[in-house]
Length: 143
Image (tube, rainbow, N blue to C red; front, top):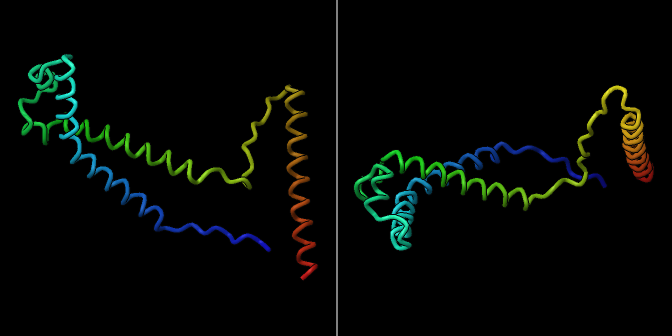
């Protein structure tokens, strides 16, 4: 029995865009809170006072964080981090297609050893394809 052919679904791209936008909105609203949390953490550790932190970032108070360039920059960095983690999780969950053939690197001219290795690899791939074709032909004859 043949495997069902995979069909590209256009809603996958739209859902990916929707997830990206929703993560951006989440990062936008989380950024001021995380900036304040970072400021308080550094103040508690004695690394920097609240005034020094606000001065270095060019903000005066919590109300001035929203809409500042620091807010936007932190939101973008947060979005990249969250989106990168999500992409990594999805890539690990999907895994690698076992039927996909590996990329082959063509050897340079004059590289006899590399050419022989490349020729063996091509021969192996050809033999594998022939066996697959023969198997499919036998299955068709049985029907």
